[in-house]
Every structure is written in C-alpha cells, then in structure tokens.
Length: 372
Image (cartoon, rainbow, N blue to C red; front, top):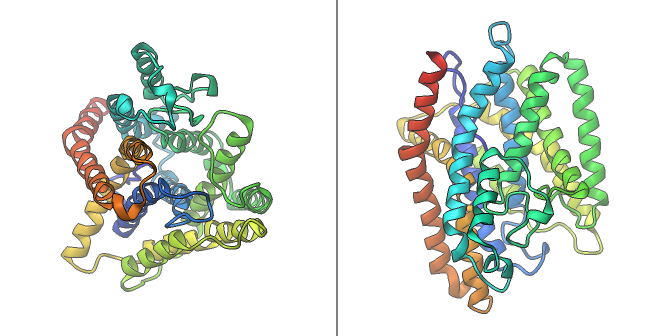
C-alpha cells in the first residue's frame, strides 16, 4: 500500500494520512486472525481485505489532487521518477525482509520451502525488487503468489499499472469521459462480486487469467473513482472527521460475512456497496476535516508515516506466524494470542525502523539526486 505524500506547495490532508494508517494496521490484525480461520465465512474482521480497495481509492484521490494541475511543468519521466522514488525503496526492503525470513517459515503448509535452493530464493528476491510478477511455475512457497517472498507486492504491481494508465491516458480525460470509465469499472466490479464463486473480491495475487481479472477489477474502479472524486468534490467542514471516518472504516472492514454459502451474492453486494459508495464517502469526509489539536495531528502523522512501511513489510512476519500455528497443530487464537500480539508489535517496530533508518534517508538521497 503506497504512500500518497503531496508536493509541499499543496495543502495537506492529515486525516487521510491517519485513515491510511488505520487501514494498514487493520490489515495486519486481519492477517493474524486469518491464520486461525477455516473458511471465508468465519474470518474475524471479515472484510479486512477491503482495505486494499480503500488504498486504491485513496491513491487515486491524492494522485489527482497532487498532480492534475502540474502537468504543464511536469514530464512523464518526472512523474514516474517521483513515483518510483516514493514506492520502490520499500518494495526492495519488503523483499529483503521476506528473503531473510524465508527459511524460518517451513511447515506442512509449505513443504516447497525446504526444497528451495538458496540461489533460487535469491533469484526470486531479485525479480521481486523490480516488482515484475512471477509466473506460478516460479512459486517457491506454494500459494501461487506472484511475489512469494512478500505476497502484498501484488497490490503495488497494480498500483503501478494504475499510475501508468493515469499518466499516459486518463489524466487527459474530461470529467465526462472519466465518469464513463468509472461507471463501467463500477459495473464490472458489481458483476464480478455477485457472480464470483466466493462472493467477494479476494484475489489478485497470482499471474494467471482469473487472478489478473480480479486484480484489475479491484484496481480500476476505486483508483479512478478516487481520481474523479478529487476533480469534482467540494470540500466542506466536518468536525471530528478522523474519529467518525475511522469508526465507519472499521465498521465496514469488521462487518461479519453477509449471508452464507447459499447467498454468496449478498456478500458481493455488500462489498460492492462498500467500495462504490462508502469508501468515497469516507475519503470525502476525511478530506473535509482537519486535525483539531496537537495530539490528533501527531496521531495522524504517526499513522500516515507508518502505513506504507507496515503494509509492505508485515507479511513475512505473518508467514512466520502461520507456520508457527501450523507447527503447533493449528493452535486456537485463545492460546496463541501472546505470539499474535508479539507478531503485531514486531510488525509495528519493524516498519518504524525501516521508515527511520532506511526509507526516509533513501528518499532524501533520491530527492537530492533528482533536483541536482
């Protein structure tokens, strides 16, 4: 999940930073509980995976806000350099963390780990640095991920596709043309969610036709709806916006599964409704609010800074937690909670360390190189 820092000449949206952090930490907690679930029906924080769709919408909104009126003095190369400088350092770090922890994740779920030679793992890591997707034949784990050392890399892959589409074509769209694109993408999203075999939008992480369809469907509507929102919204003034937006976001993500195996379409409708209507509403409310005191400003700043590092580095720790649960006979959360809490704390500490000791210095170095 990328960071959406705007140019210094633009007013900032601190509450959107905070919401990005709330969603990112929710993803970590969701993945911890996911380890103990038996199916998509009994997941705790059942719709936590929708945070990715929220990230796409946030990205489209802030990319449009930050760059739409700058193209008269910004080249394509300049835009892509800015995005690479912001996103790619932590992509590399996420793959490094995944490689460092890979051989500590052996369990019955992933017998391929013990059979993977170091040279092959390192080759997967090097390809991962580029974020180019790996085919299923190169999977060294067994989950068919396009980035088997760090699964969430798939969403950054589609984030790059969205950025490329925006820079090459969509930035030139009129509001009418962009509205048509968003309506068509929304219709495709609804159709997929109500007709899918699982009744949800889960997927996008594998390089095969069905998963590519999911990834594109999950990216197209929210990213370009966020862009459209940035071009059409009239910001108002909403008090306590961070509190209300955070609560609404958490309710959406934590909502229990809608319907059962005999009503998959009902859950699909809920997810479509959340992505198409509720997420834009949350972003609008967040953009309409301000931090009202130093404490709330610091909270939003901390959450915003932490959001991208924790999203892109936490999953190798989840792999380890999953392996530990598997190796302990699929221990229940009621017994595993101390290790779960340690995993969450470690994810936060790792992300903060990566931010302060690696990401910020590297970005500052790249900024100086680009301005020289």
